[in-house]
Length: 210
Ligand SMILES: CC(C)=CCC/C(C)=C/COP(=O)(O)O
Image (tube, rainbow, N blue to C red; front, side):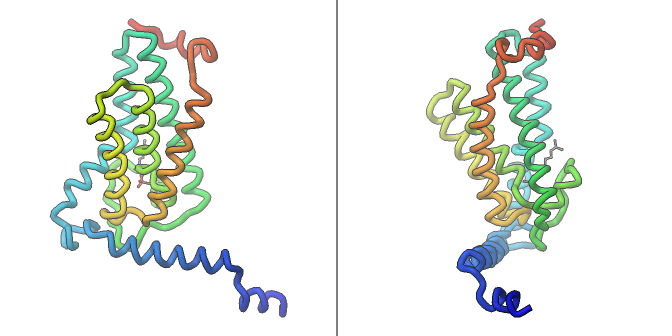
């Protein structure tokens, strides 16, 4: 119809801005995907990037938290670990829902050779590693008493995990940027809904210290 034609010929400012951002995102992400394959410009650093990938993967974090929960012999420790477990599960759920809704394909230069993925992980928005890195790092900074160098390390780790997603070609820059934002906000939700023996007595009674 003439109206539709007019809309196509006069795209909104927001439409143009979004399309330009997307084009810059794709161009920049392709340029930065220097470890996407063995033969790529920085292919020799790929194993290190894969190591960072494992460090931010959901499985080690879930298994590690469950292991520490099983070994924990203090109420305070169990409370923190229980909330970390809740945080990790909430993150997996939220990322899976958004990936399933947005369905953005991973960059064409990505090799899908990640270990233990879910079916929604064929999509790239947002980066699950970036959300986890941001929220785990914020969680650690707020609930563990650490010396300054270790606090700096926790933040650096999160940033490097995010960067490695783009270098590996797994994600576009915007997937990681939004992942960081989402992870940061998720921590605020968890802090607000903090589980304790007072508001979730059944949960804590189920998991008593040995
Ligand atoms: C199966 C479990 C417990 C977690 C999946 C972790 C995973 C492979 C996420 C994908 O991360 P990116 O979105 O950053 O590629």
